[in-house]
Each structure stands twice: as C-alpha cells, then as structure tokens.
Length: 354
Picture (spheres, helix red, strand yellow):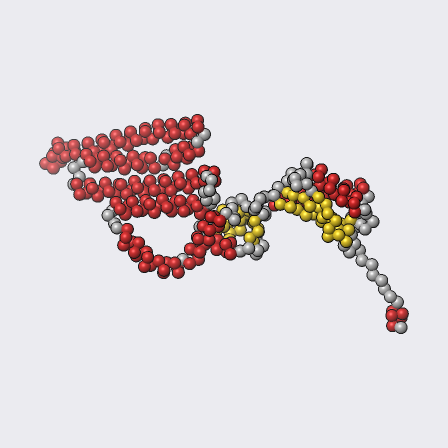
C-alpha cells in the first residue's frame, strides 16, 4: 500500500509529463501532415508540377512515422530514464529515421528519373537499370551514414570485400557479366527503349526495358522476349530505328511480257505517289519510284516499286494497301499479272531412239 501511495503522490508525475508531450507532438504532427500534404497537392495542381505531386504522395506514409520518432525523442528528454539508456534509444530512433529517409529518397530518385530523365540532354536512357543504379547509390550512402553513426569503420569492411572479391566475382560471374553488359548497352545507345530490333538468332520486337540482368523485347504478337544482357551484347543486332526510323520498302511486281514497260512504270509511279497522300505511314518524300529490276523473269517482266515508310511496322499496312491499288488499276488498264507457266516439249520416243 505504501508503494501505491508513493506512486500516486509522486511517481505518476514522471509519466504524465512525457506521455502528455508524446500525445501533444503526435496530435500536432497529425494536423501538420494534413495541412502540409493538402498545400503541396494544391500547389502541384496549380503549377502542374509532377515532382511536387509525387513528393506529396510519397510523404504521406512516412510523415507520421517521423512524427512518432520525434514524439518518442521528446518524451525521453522529459522523462527520468537513465542517460545511458536514453542515449541508446535516441541513437536507435536516429537510425530508423535514416532508414526511412533512405527508402524515401531511393523511391523518389527512381520516380524522378522515370518522369524527367528522358528530358535531360546527354543523360543515360531511362531504364530499370538506371533507376536501380540510382537507388543503389542512395542505399549505399544511407548505409555509410548509419555505419558512421554506429562508430563502425568502413576500412575493414572494404578490406574484407577486397579479399573476398575474387570469390564473389567467380560465384556471380553470370550476374556481373549481365550487369556490365546492361550498363554498356544503356551507355552506348545503340539499342534504346522503343527501338525495333532484330537479332541474328531471329528474335525481333520493340525494346521495352533494359534491367540489370536482361533486356525485354515486346514482339509484334504482343509476347515478351527476355534476353540476357550478355547475350544481347554479343549478338548481331539490326536496329530498324537507327540512324532514323524512316526506312525503304521494296515491293516486287510482275507483269506479262505483252505489256509495255514504260507504261507499267508510269502507272506504278502514279499509284504510289497518289497513295503517299492517302495511306498512313507511306511517305511522299523521298518520292516513290518504280524500276524495271530485276527485269526479265521466267514468265513475267519483274519491276520493283521503291518507297519509304515512316517506321518498320508501317511496311505491312502499306504493302497491303498498295498491292490492292495496283491490282485494281492494272485490271482497269488491262495489264495482266501472270502466274508462272512452263512449256514442256515432248519428242517422239521412236524418233529419239533412232
């Protein structure tokens, strides 16, 4: 009973003040969060700033965590907890705060690179690899700050890593080769996001992502092709978007030997140049041109209609539309498109035996 009476008269004051401070800081932090987040969202909406909107959204979750850390720290300062224990708790709270900041800034860096990286002249292309490297750099920086705070020297750790580096490199040989190959692909810019490429092994499609391990290609059939970066770096690659997206298209046409080549050439030029004004993807400049090449075939006069399309995938609808127009116009003009024929002469067997 004496202990209870002593607590009610004296010791409860040691808890009331810290707990009151804790609750006060939490309440103030809650209202401050609402005011701050709403103000940032309002300002982002007014200025159309994606960075401000992104920061406001990312601050929503960790803000109260930071307020809680601050509230506990204030309560500790007002309590009669032994100084040694209070110092350890404060250091632990500081480490938690650094970890939360590291997570926040790593996510913010990835989002900023994703939204603004492509607009920076001379910067690396925006890929999963560049975002991962930025996040990794921030995590390493946060780790170094925590180690320094804990009084742990980095030099012995670096020495240990140097000694074990060879073993780690051998164990992670494939992973490291893919990582460095991915970095080379991103820096060289010979294969970029959005490019249409074709490998010597036959795989082709749009480059959708370059990560630390592999490059992802989206085929025209809407399937994803995953290629290890090391394989891609060693492959023979045709990039249909370099040096520019525009590419030439050759459409072969065969007509009967009874046709006038000059007339066929004129009609093909008329069809293609009129189509360049109407068919999406078919370019008017350079102007389409018909050539009497490869020339004389087994059963037809062979022409080549040379035109230019805006990019690789445009060749399919352009060929579809141009061929329909050629067939209709040739039919109106009485120009025959022959099918392969072969004449076989049979000699009398008795005459041959004689």
